[in-house]
Image (cartoon, rainbow, N blue to C red; front, side):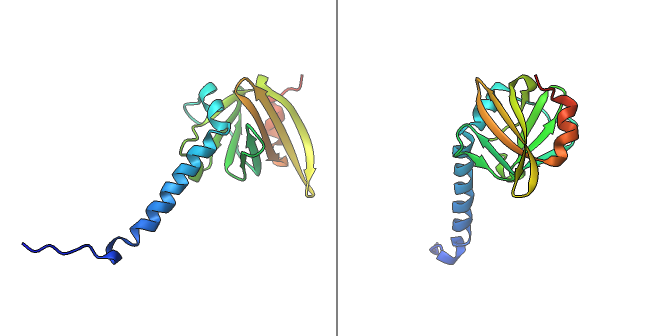
Amino acid sequence: MRTTPIQTHDISPVFPILIVVSGWILFNFAFSHTGWRAFSRRYPARSRPPGRIYTSPSSCFGSNSAGYNNAVLVVFTEAGVYFYAAFLFRVFHPPFLVPWASVRRVEKKEIFFRRRYQLDIEDAAGKIRVLLPKKVEDDLFKYYKPA
């Protein structure tokens, strides 16, 4: 019985793919521990509620260094603000629903000539700062009632 050695060209296309996928999984794991994880543990959500989905151009969980750009999706509900990650970021990022009582401030902003709404959320799980497009206005104020 004669064995043939594995040719390097047989595994070479697989190796870079494994490195990229492993790196992406490791990145998602590390990034989820900067604040997302605390909220998902405190406010787990089983399924996405009905409602219009908005993409946040910028969101910070925990410290300001943990920024998510166009990777966080938001749905406003009667119970609170539902957060979930865009498809490529869903690994280690389970969805959660923060109650309205944790929303400390909603502020209208103008950033680079675009109107936005900034939501500041803070409670025992930590802090979230989420920037949303102006088109959230109707849905946001349908549920959020300032104190």
